[in-house]
Length: 198
Image (cartoon, rainbow, N blue to C red; front, side, top):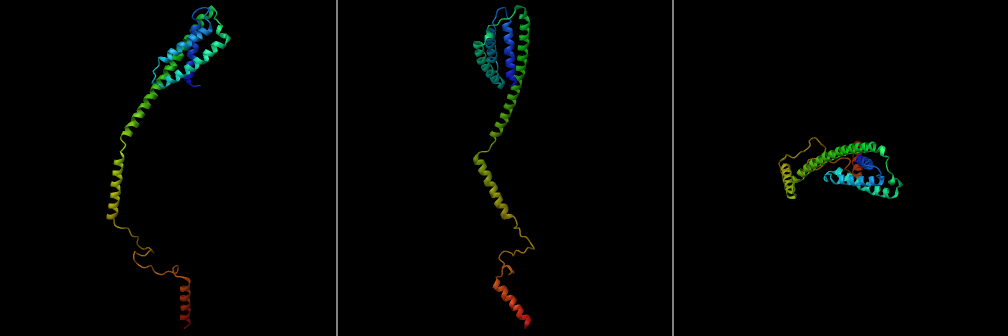
């Protein structure tokens, strides 16, 4: 259960006690009905742009459906208060209503702050989105960077590693043992053998 729902229910209970203790012989069902009407009018006076106001209104609507069902079906709706207890009940109800209203006011203030922060974030995002380049600007930038890359490659001296076993471009590679085929190797060894024998 959210804090807002708790405070709305607390306000409702306070209003019930206030209306029930208004005078002698008021039934509990009548006090509940008046309390729901008063909470509905309270929720209608709230600033609609505040996100907490929407939450309060939805809680009040749900509560009014539940209370209407309860008034019709519950036998306690016919109960009345003892005249000696009226001032105590009324004072308790007024304290509940005052506490709930101040708590809801604090929640509304937090909602205004959160909404203001969200508005600032949206303004910052909008300012960033308005500075986005168009497609043609992006293409121009890409073309310029390509041209700069090509010019840099043309003007830069070609890198050539020195002292490697890779032959320079255009030179024929020296014949190595890996490149000779098996027949050539046998001929060379046979020739060397005959040279030593002679």
